[in-house]
Image (tube, rainbow, N blue to C red; front, side, top):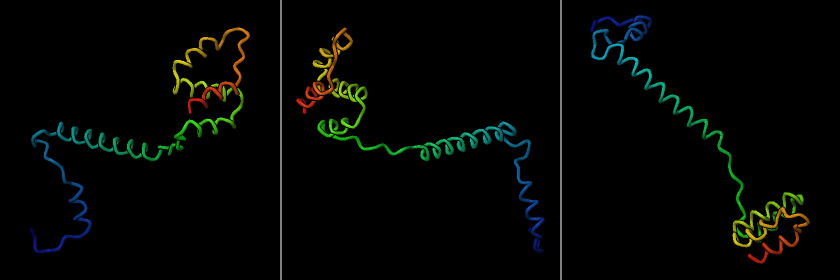
Amino acid sequence: MTDRALSEAAMLSSLRDIRLPADAAGGIVAELALIVGLSALAALLVAGMLRLVSLRERAPVPQTLTDRLAELRGLREGDRRVALLHLLRSHAPDRYAEVASNLYAPGNELENDALEAEVARLA
């Protein structure tokens, strides 16, 4: 160390020159490994931040079958029929199998009200 104070420019230039000597253990391979490692860490951090930012809060799902039936009453007829079939499949798979086997039979008009009554009996 010297007794004189270094100028700010001299200190900044000396900080920029800090490097491992070329003949140090690992040499250029060690520097490349460090660069790859730091880049991978930065990529993981950016990906994690993007995931946190892009997550949407899910709407709460009604817990009871009665609540689900009430929620379906506002849908169009076709959408309501599909949703009622999904509910029937999840709560009474055996009855759904009977209904589904005749679902596409000619002349079989599945009434939404009858299907809703079928699902409401399960509640």
